[in-house]
Image (cartoon, rainbow, N blue to C red):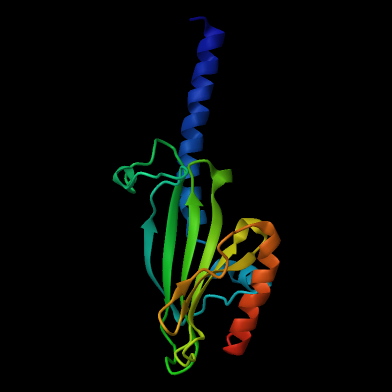
Length: 196
């Protein structure tokens, strides 16, 4: 190996090591900033901020998302990420200060991608769950919303639970044309509950 090629190899290895030394703490630091530090963005998107009344219950590594798998026996567990593959995590938050005699904001689930490749670290979704203990027989008792951060905070109704026990999807077909309509429907329900 001539000297020029050897120098290029050493330089490349040096850059890889330098990137590794910097990338891991940067990635860890970014993933720790998806709560209070994003409150300004939450308010801009019409979401409730995380305050001192919220408690972080856990951060859980999720199974890799690599497309649909129709075989339950082949469901991948959380330990089977490939080398340097982006990992998907969720923070689980609960509201410590709620009055359960009236409608309340029960919980948040914040999902994010953590990557060795610094530019691929990102906030993905935020799920918010609302409860109405005073719902009429055929009214919504629980409502879950999903906010897509990579779509500039687009929010749609994800799941609703009726007082009589019936579960239904407020928005079964998630497509761009329905999102605006669904946000109006969700806002109307939350305003009725005095949570918006």
